[in-house]
Length: 203
Image 1 (tube, rainbow, N blue to C red):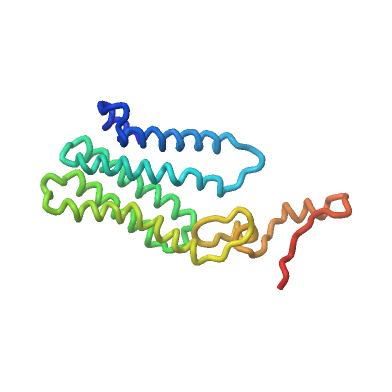
Image 2: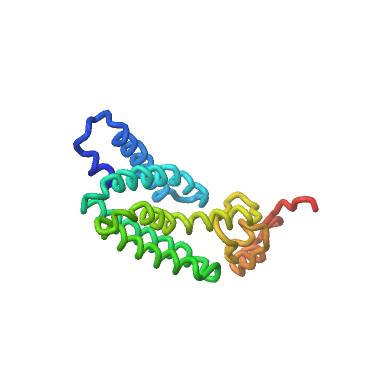
């Protein structure tokens, strides 16, 4: 978003690219602020509202930078964005560290290689499309595999999560059972006729 706004700072006020950046950037900032300050009833799936503006801003910004790849400033920005994306993907995949352990390390290494190649693109001009493809793979392979794993997992409950099943979320999201001693203590110590209730689906 920042790169796109900077690149379009001198265009006409009615420019479609700049308008898109303002629209999607406003959506992202307002939604992020609202979610950051929410309290009480909050569900993790609310964060899906951030996906459309993030996708749009990445698409617009990356396209604008790639079109200006002959300029050192654009290449330098891309060479920073790519490994940062790889590092963030690594951090997210590390939350399920036992799942496809090689994937996060491969993405991190590929993103670093891609950044170096993008930075030195003037000397590798004939391979620019290959370099661009490698950079795209380093950025998209993690989310793609994660989405595929989400699609093949059974889900239940009102607040499903993405990615492979995690024991700490088994009962709420995967239809399994929970083992939480704190909840057990609260239920057994409640001085009421009905301490808890659950809806059991028919077999």
